[in-house]
Image (cartoon, rainbow, N blue to C red; front, top):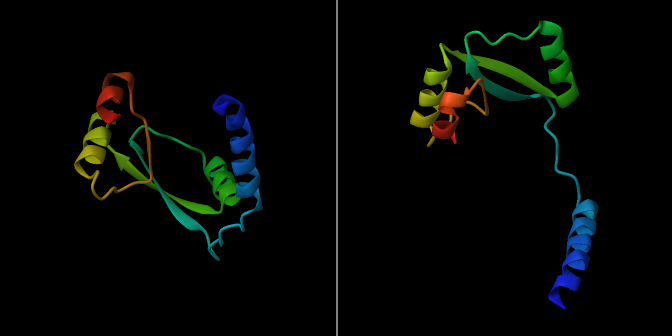
Length: 97
């Protein structure tokens, strides 16, 4: 009986969430800090297009390599220095997770 009610409960929860008032958006763009390795490269046009599409200002924080990137994130996990990490390789993925 409960397995038949689960889809109904999920549908009701989604409907209620869709009717909720939207969260207030800030007047200006928010800052999104991206920590990556030094060899990360992105064109100015792609970065600008992303910032415009998502109403953010991207701040790049470059670490020297993937090892330092992961270590910096781990050492600062109580007070993160970045919102997003990019450039974790396969050898460090288990440590990063």
